[in-house]
Length: 419
Image (cartoon, rainbow, N blue to C red; front, side, top):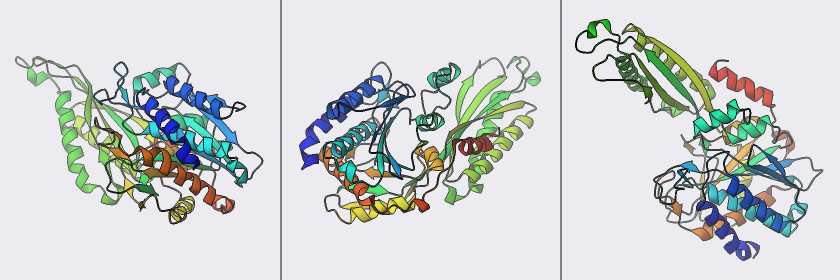
């Protein structure tokens, strides 16, 4: 009955956050909503604040395993969404508003009922900023001002030591699209990605009077685009490679041979090693495209997020817990999608899972995305997650967990970007 009783309040919190979307490292109203609810539930609560808007609080102590339950605070930049913020362009069309509400529902349950005392592990709640990789000029400024080092909220929290005492990470995430029956998901792996930026340089000349003296940087970039298209035939299907080249910057006129253009593309792959392989091929394609028209090219690599391989050992507990309930009819298991998230970076350091849930209409990250089945989102699914967490108690074999240092993480990232 607990989740039924708190349903209306949790639903209203989700709706409030949905109507007040904020971009990463700017989630100040969302942060205040979270703090207000937590203090209402537990007036004596102790919280640690980090990364402008991040919050960490713990239930229980002195146990050999510490599990983090993570809620993501930020919205997507989607100014054409039907409920976007008219000033910032932010919109909750990725479902993070429901993540926060679900995380608060779980905190309320475990604290108010005292159920956390029955767990043989510590349960830590972490509300984290900036999962979505966007608004990069703002984050670049934060970086230059020394406010952050990493664009992604989880890598930044990792740098700050927020996860140093954590042994397992658990997150939840919306599944996009409408469903004929209530559905959950586990063991869905995600791609990793990076950005490649190429500045092609030629030499300008009069396009009518003397095009012969020019070196057309725009033409170099066109050859590069064709090369990427033809390259796809040589890339492994099993690696789910994705590229999306765009013109980022140029200074062109119809009567001048263009001498400068910047092209960028993301690069998504299933594994880190293949990411390195394809990045090297893209570099060679850019270099060849410049050389064949007697130009030059400068390459820049910017790391996005690491691939996310869900921990099957921890995920199996969710599978087993699913068989002991009847409200959610379907469980998707062991899929892969080429979306990405900074949960991949955290999973480098500690085993992580991400549990998916239906209940939405429209396209995820689309203009029509919205809640469709609030009972599933704010009552049934949180109850299932709580039971899954309780099901794990007394069963986790710590010898099957792993832990890596932030230094090892940095070494991995540097090996990808070539530092």
